Length: 611
Image (cartoon, rainbow, N blue to C red):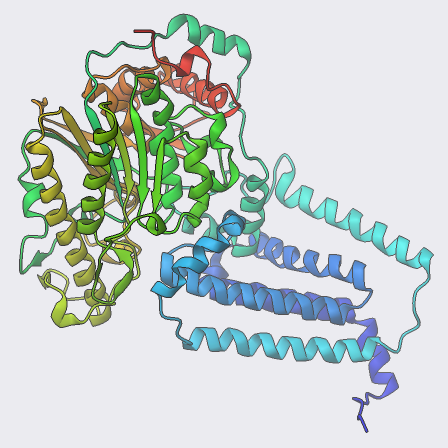
């Protein structure tokens, strides 16, 4: 015989009448829980307005559920369950990739699941604490529901009045706090780093703003109209190239230069070949993300488009890549045979859809090739040595079929996090001085990461040696997609906040050729600037859009970011809405980018001059 929870009727009535107070208390507790999960140690210093908006946002969720279910108990219980799970997922996301979960990740569930095996899930004290609080709240919600279930059911009129009242409250709340002329919560979105928004605005409030942005896939630049595009057509011309060298483009996973942020010594030189490579152009590419976001870097690199107009999306999952002009379309116009190779599953970031949409002639993923090798326990990440070996094989296969100029794009995976997988006695590079303040585990991770980079150096040396012996003109570019997840823990140099964020976003690039190349240090370039610059260095034809980026924009505004700002040639930061000497230069770029994004890939701005 089942025993029901018996609550004195008078107590049940009193508790039921105060359901909204219980919900408000739940909202306050859950706000604190989310900030703890977010590792926001200064959440009590955010200011009372920000705190109230976050609590109100949580209460708004409960209001919606109360409107649907008619009971505060179910509303509070569901909210507690969902936010507890969300908080725990955030903790692991912070640990594994130094980023929070948001609406940006909705399309990346398959990718996240695919790489999950690279990390070890451990129940730590913070996770246990969150689960404990969640269980207590759910039990309290169950008690509240037991008190409410004996109440008289409401009629249709009462339900309609309740629904109308809730909707009015929600509109007033979100308009005054988020969408009005003078909102409490900033509408600028994320800056250089997510902490600047999430830690100052609160997790729930910042998440609402990121979600709002994610509904606007393409932001029309201020002042845009088709007359501006016609003006660009009249003023801007492409350039005819005199050469057609084979072009090898390597986007190297987590390749990073730690000397930007810290000083230390190792038992061996980490990159002896790359450090002494001659006949090359060096510099740094400013990536959209820190510690993650490969697809964002990949998109900017292959298109020349800044993600400034594409806030809150994962490009390959959200955009129709067959509607945009890319480096692939530009090179195919000039007779190039194009190949893409990534030694991982094609489902990651929907690359198996995006690469064909970009019209690569040949596409290869992990499942399409044989001969990939793995280093010790890093069984999910093919080595650069085996990756580059297959790249050479694909190159030779293409040439054996038809003697066309070749464009090979290769996204590597060897240096992907997590680290500290390989036994300490099998890791060749060891930090021996300069990081004595780091705990043993962090040093273990650093040693493995540096050993991976050492292997990249060796593999790249073999690749360059191969192309040195080629009779065909070849130009090779390798650039990092973003810094590794551990980078932020190793900042030791005395840097301003702006310098620190710039350097954490900056990855090295090197451009080498087996023909004579004018050596230079190119400095810091936006990731979207790199391919136009590379094609200009290669001597091939450029569309007006690419020529504008490689010459006009690069000279005065070398860094266009997706964080609401750009940097001029002196390193001074400007917001996109500023009115200054660079406004026309930047606006013309954004106008053309928007035109490219809106299915105008065959416009003369994005095609090369007739030869």
